[in-house]
Image (cartoon, rainbow, N blue to C red):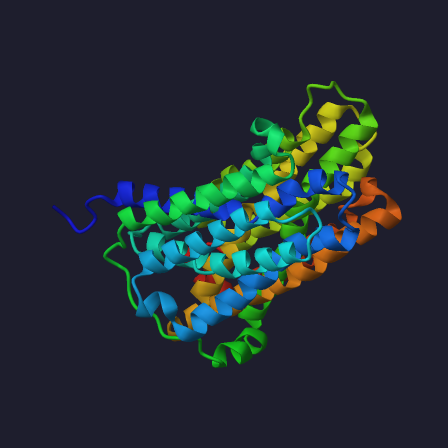
Length: 403
């Protein structure tokens, strides 16, 4: 037996556990159209449901990295503990009335708990890598995408639970995840990592190549989570103005839009290893930014045009995500790579607090037809940043010379 015996089974368990646990992330976004229909939520309250998860994740990620928790304890148990708390917080929402101020608090705690799930799952998966790191990162980002999409299916199959359905289903899924991850094992490459190095803060802003990677990542994050958080409401409002067939299901379409991103993550990871990270990230952001702008035009086009455009948007908006992490790891000094990645993630999710909160305010002012226009600003900055990096000599360290 080799040291890689059982690799497919353990990777499958890790990925499945990720999908189940991360369904908690967008339970609030999936419940939002039904919650708004109750009249109990203001625009600010609706945005707070998603923003609270992002803020919690930033706090949890920095705490986990600073204390090196996944390295001091069994990583599987850390993952299980995070999934358990996230699941309980999602189920806790079932006991609260619509519009309760305690609901954003429960989402904040759930987000902090997920910081002990997603990065730890990435580390567990990467420990099985043998020349296929890019594919494995794409696999885990694909798992994140499917997990984020899954709450949108809950209203389709559990109509009697109204807005509570996404919270109920995602909570139970996270509890199952906590049990499943204990059946997986870390691979032979699993190693302890040092705690967060404050020197990474200076390096992130002074190293020209890392600065461009992180600026590109911020452009990507400016768009991604605001789109994921509000596409369900966008689809619901659009459908109500189009007089579509009563059998049309906005939650089902929203699930498809987000879930198709898993294909984009895997495909972009495979492609970036072959033609270059800066090229793939630039192409993905150019396409997603174009979709953001064209969504206003598609509003009055035949329904098939809008559906096709949103599906393309769903694929391209997440396709480049893993490549920013891969690029930062390739460009950072080996002894600071973990800290650089932690800071990159924290900055990115902190930025999402702004866009998730402000997008519905913009949409109320201009109408939901133009809701995604501001999101195109992120890809514009991101494309410039990555093409600028492509011209720098440090770019030869990306993807074994494939810039």
